[in-house]
Image (cartoon, rainbow, N blue to C red; front, side, top):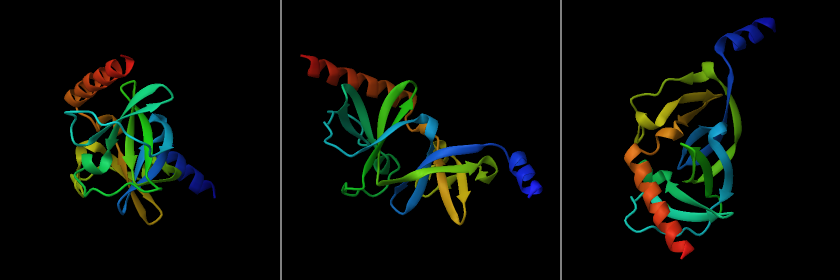
Length: 170
């Protein structure tokens, strides 16, 4: 019993993640970046936005851009269902919603159970991946949510958001 505790301590701390699905694959994002999980709702489209930016929503007075992770990762598009969720995360001090097929639960994973990212997982390049976690027999792709948008995309999104806010205010 004592050796199990020692090996856990040697492996490192536990990461808390929100686990979610996109298609048949399981993903996780660090819970510290997650502000909330909400049901999918009406999205106001933004003209000239990149294809993976579905538009914006009004969340308690805040205009939140919505990204579709299926689209971002180049996966086949699918109709939104009652299980579709928006995970609102904070990236560079701004709230951004990410559409996922479903959200499972909060999981804890020992850092020793996280492998470095492979060069490519499915259609998702390693730039988005922090690692691959092993939970029992399941593998969970851990996303580096801060890298979902490039610097240029962040600037463009802020510009589109400001334009939408100005239109809404007038």
